[in-house]
Length: 171
Image (cartoon, rainbow, N blue to C red; front, side, top):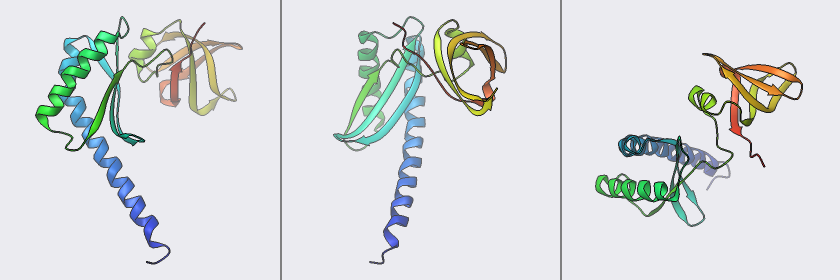
């Protein structure tokens, strides 16, 4: 075997696996969305990846009132049944359903509107006033930006510049 040949195969295999997983996530999302809508819940994130104990399909859900253990059990039961019937995954895997936690990610305008007044951490793709990481209270939201009250005062962050955002745990 040539010294430089295996990394190319690894990259190709990894890229194909990632693309395949993304297609699977899209199909799983379409399949379970009606169940979530019926529960007044939303899918925050779906992941399918290989971990130490095998393949894991992780569904992270949320509701306006917060997620209970019963919510997770119901989604797990109904999603598991649908996945079994549809045979989307043809090899062994573990299904996990959970809440996004206290430090839940903020992914869209709806999330920012829902959590106005809460403490959050926002990272931007470009500096605003020489800063790219902001920790403060979420303020008013308009169509293209979020205001935050930070230690230095107020900052307005365009949604287009938000690279990552999540709630901060408050004690």
